[in-house]
Amino acid sequence: MARGSPKTPRTPSILRPMPSLIIDQNELRNWGGLWRGTVGSAKKAGTPTTKKADRFDKKQGMDFGMVFDKAFAKSLADMIGGVDILAPVNDALLPPNPNCVELGKTRIVGGIRPQNYDAAYRPDGPRVVYDSKTLNDTKSIGKNWQNMVNDLATEASTVHTRFPYCIVAFIIILPRPALQPAQERALIRTLERLGSRGDELDQNHLAEAIALCVWDPDFGTIDPNVPQKDSILRIEAMPERIYPAYLDRYKNLPPHEAEEMHEADEGEDDEEGAN
Image (cartoon, rainbow, N blue to C red):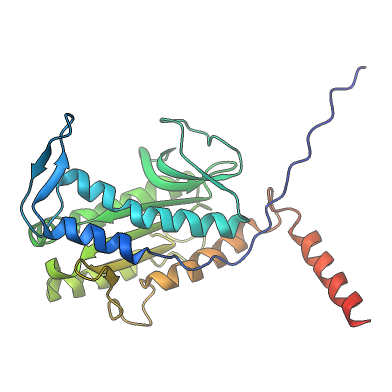
């Protein structure tokens, strides 16, 4: 019997702790200028529209989330082993490269409905999915924050019912001038409950990680005092929740199966250096 051609060796991805998400302050400040101003998104002909001040129009609100989407994708790709960040192919159900982080509208067929996420890692099905949510003015926050919470629970549920080992992460972005104190407190309490999924046997509607970012349009900064320093909703806490969960569920499984060999090699190097 003739043998087939030899397979090309696959380069393993060596896991490493997930780095902090780096949000570009200059980019955030530029978006703050748009939020404060009255210039809206351009029409197809290139003519700019007008909008009310202290808010984004619909397209600006959607595009603004990309500031955080890029930061998340970069941090996730570094954790996975420095893999490429690629755009999904239309509504394809598979990634353009088996071992990449996708940034952009990524379609996952869940147990409740198909759902588009803003970033994902799915080498053999979804292992990590991520979505950002923005509410961009006082009226929108007051009217829609509870509906947004329902959307988060549904997005987590639709993935977890089919893929219970998948890590679901969200970033919620709200402008400081538009967030009222009572809404802030209620939102924090609700999101802390929703972002508390501990393992693959936990409730499906919970997410493994949620970050709440309250941003200042004038300075391009994220409020350092909201949520409180010990809250799981701090953006700096997101890697601390995602990396241990990923390690627990996927360490030494393809494409990370060389992890133990890598650790053994490092141990041998340390021993040789000591001699």
